[in-house]
Length: 445
Ligand SMILES: Nc1ncnc2c1ncn2[C@@H]1O[C@H](COP(=O)(O)OP(=O)(O)OP(=O)(O)O)[C@@H](O)[C@H]1O
Image (cartoon, rainbow, N blue to C red; front, side, top):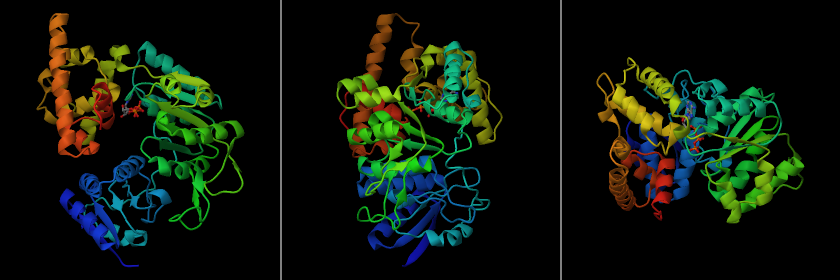
């Protein structure tokens, strides 16, 4: 099969290469620095006008499924065969995309990549948990209580349900449980149920037998459950799982076996399930969108992540943590913050929780020259900064700001034809924050 590779150093060249690859119907490996490949791929995704493409890319970038040291693919997931990332020695996705199987050409392509990054490829431990309980910052009562629950849960084999608003550290909790458990030397496999299109999720989770469907990879595919055998599977955003698959998860919990797509015999597996969601599962059960029996099966050990507004005393410590971390990443001296900046952070309502705090610190660091002051806070925090005004005035101000925010989102959705990633980029907000706001303002998108 014909195959060539293209080195790209800008968003536009990635976009052009992808367009060419699609129109030529041939194989290309596209290699670029992480920023240009990310933006380029997303733009190409928009060109293709398939929402699934974006989701797949997002998933791949997030999971960073890696290549081996020699550049060969460590693990190819057939359902995502078309989008494969390359991870460099500092675990950053530098990105490789292939619409056809261009993989055999990667070592050659990588050795020609003149970014200084191609050297020192290391196999990222894709099946291991990255975070430990020490990565959870905070000394407040709610955080210490949550950490105790994590330690207690780790000692058991039971299913754990991690609950909490977006950005409260549910993923950190899941990693920590695995790392503290007797399964820590075995695999930890994360699946973001919301990021994988429904039609791919079943084969992704359970794998499939050879010839199960048209386009299936020869020899079949191992699913995430099987990959996690002996270890832990983390089903993130389980509230977004379709009902049909919920019954298959129930079966795993009850029978401790899985059935591959197109498979004839069940396969016994030993996997600990940790699930998480920011949704209100009880509500979903009431609406018949989530199975009640699965709800109870999952809630053997529930762990509630506290929202940041309920442990404000940890904010200075978290700010210090993110300032140090981000200054290190940027290779600059850690800047100081003034009192007003910290006071405003402590007072704010934190809808996006710790993730939002980390983003605000990142933004402030990038705009600051020396000490970080209150005027480096984003305008979205404005109403909270006026909290010394009367309640009425604050409410009026808030309604104006909310109206403006709603309009900005509707406008951005129009401009970008509903492409949420572009909308987030243009508004400088995270995807989860966008989804929260769409819900809050009842915007159809
Ligand atoms: N207590 C904490 N200490 C340090 N970092 C934290 C803490 N809580 C959250 N974070 C950081 O905030 C970000 C969001 O955390 P995480 O992804 O675990 O949240 P989540 O609850 O799983 O969010 P979502 O529901 O949106 O997936 C991550 O960068 C994480 O490292």
